[in-house]
Length: 470
Image (tube, rainbow, N blue to C red; front, side, top):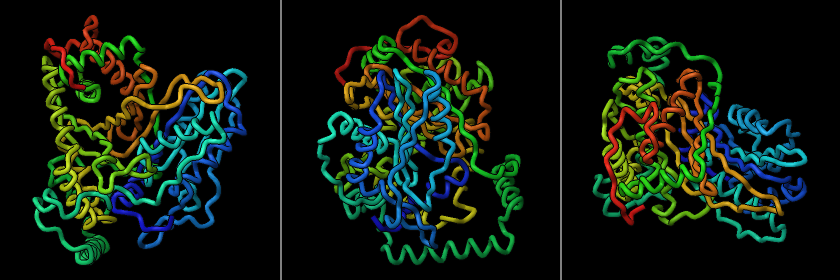
């Protein structure tokens, strides 16, 4: 696979200078997966996905190359305890990919005589969280049946190139500039902004001062060299509590995702105190594979877009009322009209790419909001529950991006809801994330009808009615 990076992929490449952006997925197993089968499965799956054998060539316009890329690596680690995987996941989150050598994926097998964890790490420059899930699922399938033949997938680009073009909703946003003219304008705009930067306009502290004056906020602190360190906190709801939460969401014609967004927004606001009010921004990655043209199936790549919604929270707010509002927003974002608007946004991003203004949106959001978070929900995960006679007990998902207090990776597998909060001390004090996780858990318990605990007392919970909607 040899092609130029799309606008979205170049944006992720630039964002990774602030924090390592490695989506990590893993399974925890009772029993030991045979190393030979794992190695064979990785080779088989790598042959299916063209994007698993590439590197990035950092030219003036960066591009993916499949030349001289080594095989997908598998590292074997002796398992020292049942919690050893936490150290390995932390390492995987913080260790950048060898992006110029490739490949942009790696595996770790942590094993002892009784159990193991298989960890798959990808790079956000060419993978969303669901892509890693698909790869790990296929690896488990081949481990279970080494003779399994997987249908090779075609080479694809990022979702940028599969958004509706020329349709009714695309035209509703107004005429789109032809590609050649848009590219020429983008080159000239970036050249002008670059010239201004070289002349000292917007450089270093001067740029921060201009932004601070414009926004009426203190200047940003000097940036710390190197990617921001990443930590994580894990929480799990057992089958009974997960079922109770799902039932409560159905009774209110809502979803677990929307309940999580409201609970997380409130928990982040109350970092400043139990009576705090706040305006919290939430980035919610939405899988759009089925809405693209042509539609995209289980391909490896970036096929989710991440709109930002704003959530006002405070004491005695109506929890299910806020959740209903959130669901309306999610439905609106997961629509063809919204995706047509996304195409226009990508066009605008091209104009400032690689210039000091590229991060203006993030900085403005940080100045105007009381907090920013990501809630990334993979939903009900479909994975083999056994592989080569080994029981697959649980699944975890972890990720981080810059300029947010935390990224919550959440999914359910075998009836258990697992929530992994990734954060960095650059944006949130590590001690705070434990409190956020505890408060979210308490709020979800109260929403499910359990005895009210600290954290659930801030909300009013209206009674629901049974509904067939999910």
